[in-house]
Length: 521
Image (cartoon, one colour):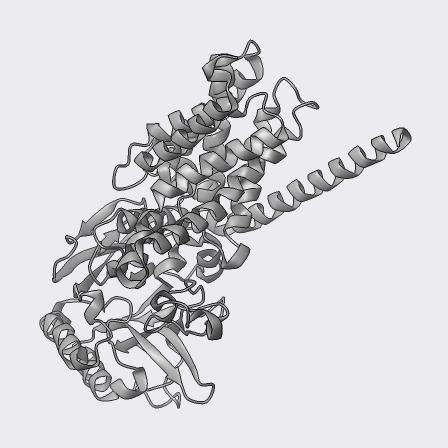
């Protein structure tokens, strides 16, 4: 047996192909590397039996996530208070869990090897879609590093307003499988037709204009406080941090329609922050401006903490009485957003009575939040409707779809990436926000504590940004859009229908396979 045919060599090659994938994502953004890595991986799957396909898919996934989400280790090692070997073990567990999903797609594909011997690998994109759908939902979901994000700067991105990022991942994989057959198979007709169709479709996808510029400009400012993570919840620093944001914003009210502070910018519970909030509200209303800020709310009736966005200033709330327009903001008003998709460990701890005793990682400040509703009204600020997402939520396109309507003017995501230091995590996070802007055809405002704060236009291009790790203010003009992308109208429904069809297909296949075996039993 030659070295290239050795099972160990194929496992190692799959792992290296997975490692290479990190170069196709931000901050490297070498999108052709994803094609190379996937074709190498597909070659290792060709003629593999079910067991081999599982382990090669797992090996690919282990390399893919070990390199791609290595930034998670920065937060565990820096703030987790655990020995290095323990933090590395936790990272290995996370990567191994995520590697189960490409392993599942590879295994399901291999199950059809003897039924579709000449072209069974063409089923891989279908089962990959199913596995990614599951990855985005099981155990609260972790859809980070999906394949489509690697193509945000490639010509394939033209498909995104039509099919969304998740289906783009399958189209990329389909193109790679077809290209693999053209390069290494004797049967080239079907792969040639598929690849030609994808190329033509990509060209045609660039032609329609689903969303147009209304020509209406909005003056936006975002304040990047650059507060060190170690100081954010220091009781002795609360007033200093709040005053810093107040000072940085003092000159912005006069010439901006909307000002945004990042996630939990005010490090004090909302009920205890009323003097500051009322002063800011009055100042913003005086200049016909609005300000959105992150804050932690504690509802005394339910004894629940919420990671919240509130709106202060002009047109910022619903008054207790319709005839009373003098108090836009008041504590408990409904012009607010409570984060729904909480980050495991960081914002809620499973089995917390046990886990919090194990290590500081499971007992971080502000890690006992309650969930907001899945569907919430858009924030109303300065005459604008904004669909908000807090931090990790921006990775969930289905949640975005549930909260974007025809009246939505802007997408808004606020975050604090100080947990991840100078890693590639914040850059990947920015590209995820770019993808949501393309899917829904709306400008995206991204306000962060320490970067990367940016304004993204409806085509996913970064229109303005400020450097990381600097106390800075971004001031720019954003032009609103009109129209809807096909994905914003039907994309989520199509994804659910496709998953249902795949599940039915697998169920029927399993029943037929069992029925055929019965006479021989």
